[in-house]
Length: 294
Image (tube, rainbow, N blue to C red; front, side, top):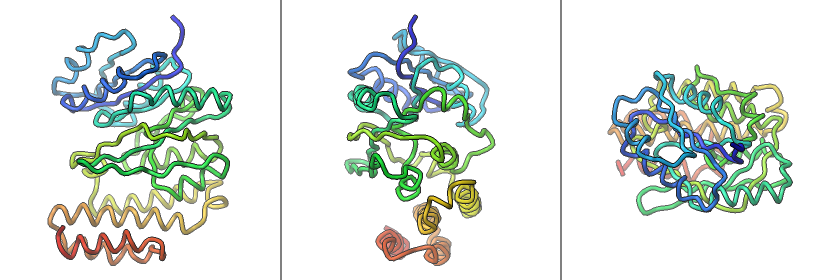
């Protein structure tokens, strides 16, 4: 059996009610040369029955004892046979043209890059927001620090990702630290499209792994990332501050949603020391949310 061009990995844990939608978005692709690996990371709900209800031979299900997200990702990478590997969270989805447009980008680029990316759409209720795409040519590592983006929408060469597995001790900013290390030496080609849909909801990992203690850890991790050999020489210090500010404002908004407005205001006052003039819209919007509770 020939190896597919793409392997898509879905790590999942106790989200059977969301998993089916993610899988169906892969099945709906208008490009056929793919395999899908579902890594069940110790689920105790009916995840297995949902996964095994899909009979397409390109779909494989693998159960393991719980090793957290990066442990599930690493298992999927080791099982992957595709030339390029991408990840799909169990609560997100991809548009039908996602893989065909990535394949077109790979062909146009002559298989010359390590990473290919289609743009992200943030979906919250009826509101859709585009995450800024990269520009092909300028320093991708610098652009990565300048824009708040994730690894969703990207596919990585199998050789690159198998040689750079995820750190299973990381739960916080794990994507950011991993990509920071990868993009020091890897090349990225941006496809001019938006085909990866991130569903924003209260049960997201980024919303549940937030409190003041974790904020401090995230700030430490950002300092670790910025001081990684080869980063500070290419990334302006203000982009480091911008990422730190993002963590502070995100924590403020989560605290506010939990009714902890006094604590949120304290964090806000601490965080604004990292703000530049271009950040004041974000800072002001967070201040209004804290002040009004809305």
